[in-house]
Amino acid sequence: KWFDLIKKKKLKVDEIIFVSWDRFSRNFSEAVSTIYNLRDNYGITPQAIQQPVEFDIPESLLTLSIYLASPDVDNQRRSGKIRDGIRQALKQGRWIRRAIIGYKNERDQFNKPIMVIDPDKAKHIQFAFEAFANGMTQVDIRMELEAKGIKMAKSNFSVLLRRVAYIGKTIVPAYKDEPEVMVDALHEGIIDEDIFYKVQNRLADVQHKSRRVTKTITRRDEIPLRGHLACSKCGETLTGSGSRGKLGKRYFYYHCNFCKKERYSAPLLNDQFEALLAEFDFNADIKRFYDHLLLQLAEKEQDTNVQDIPKIKTKIKVEKERIKNLQDLLADRVIGSDDYKDMRGRYSENIKELQKDLKKINQNKKGREQYLMSSLNLIKNLCNTYQTNTTEYKQRLVGSIFPKKLSFDGNQCRTPILQEVLFWVLSHSNGYRAKKNEQLLKKLQLFAVVEPEGIEPSS
Image 1 (spheres, rainbow, N blue to C red):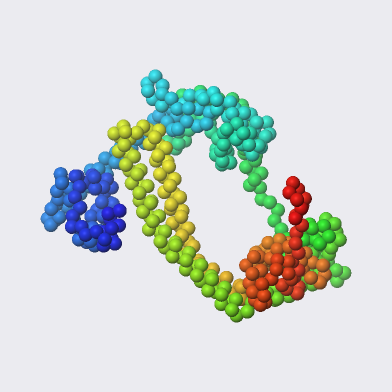
Image 2 (image 1 turned 90 degrees about the vertical axis):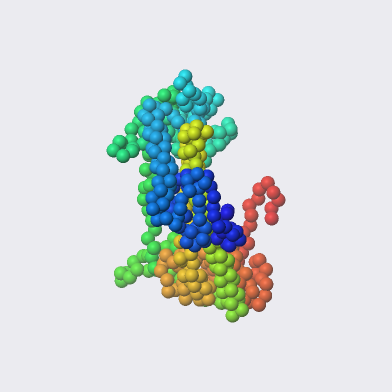
C-alpha cells in the first residue's frame, strides 16, 4: 500500500528503514529490481538498521549482494528440504495431505501424520464403488450420497473413483530421473481391489465412448436452413437432401422424415427466407442509436478491463508472497506439513485463476475493434451479409436471429420468438411500439406458444 501511495505521489518519502535485508525481501532478483526502481525513479533509498550499506561507494554493492542473496539461498535450501521430506514420506506410504472422504487425520505412535478409517463415511464410499461397479450411473450415485449428507461436484466424484488410496496404495510422482511408482500405503484400504479395478475398467469404457467421433452432418450450400426449420404438421425438425432427376441433375428439398407430410423445394424456401431478411430494414435514427450503443458498451468494457489489470497483477504478487512466507512458518514449526500443503495449494490455485483472468482480458482487448465493426455492418445490411457468407456462417446467423425453429406453410414463415433486440429495433423502426403478438413483417408471423397444463392453472 505504501508503494502505491509513493507511485501516486501522495506520500513523500526520503528513506525506507527496516531491521535487516532479509526483512526487505527474500528474493534476490526482485530485491535488486525494487532497489533500483526506488532510487532511480523516486529518489528513495532503502536502508537496513543492522546491515547498513553505503550506496555511494561502488564496492558496497558486493556486500549488498551477499545480504540479498543469503536469504534467497536459504529459501531454496529450505524448499529443497521440504520437497525431499515430502517425497521420502510418500515413498514410505505415508499420506501427508488432508484426509480424503472416508478417512480422518490422526497421528501414529511416532507422532507422525497418518490416515485412519472414518467408519461413518467409509460405508458411503464403499457404496459408491460397489454401485458404480454394478452399473449405476455417477449422477444417481451422487444424488444418493447427497441425500445421505455427502455432497460433491461431478468432477470431484470422478477423481474419487480413481483414487488408489482407497485400496491402501499411494502414488509417488515422477521426479528428475525417478519414474512415478505406486507403493503400499501405511493406512488401511476400505475398497476391495477387485471392485476397484472393475470400476476403473468401466470408467475407461465410459471415457472411450465419450471420445468417439460422432457422425457429423455435412453442410451443403444448397440447404443452408437445414436444422432451423420445423414441420408445421408434427413440429419435428425438417432435414434436407438431394434427389437425382432423369437427366442426372440433383434437386434439393427440405422434408420431414417423421410425418412425411411436408416437402418443399430448397431453392424456393431459400429465396423466401432471403426475402424475409430483406424486410429487416431499420431507419437512420435506429442505426445511429445502435452504433452509439455498441460504442458505449465497448468503451465501458475496455475501461473496466484496463482498470482490472493492475489489480489482478497486485493480487498475483500478494499470493506469491504468501507462498514464500509459508516456508518460513513451516521451518519455524509454526504450521505443520498438512497445513503448509493445503495453504500452498490454495494460493497456487488462486494464482492460476488470476493469470487466466489476465490472459482473457488481453485476448479480448485485441479482437474488440474488429468484432465491433463486424457487428455494426451486420445490423445495417442483414440480407447481404447472409447472402455473401459461408453456409456455416449462415446457419449461425439464423440461429442468433431466431431462437426457435421456423416453420413454412408455402407462403409465409412462422416462429414463436424473434431475437429480443431485433424485435425492439423493428418495432421502433416502423414508427410504433408493437405488441407482443403483432405482425412486424409481411413474410413473418409471430405466434404464441401455448403452455402445457400442469399444477398451475392454464395460461
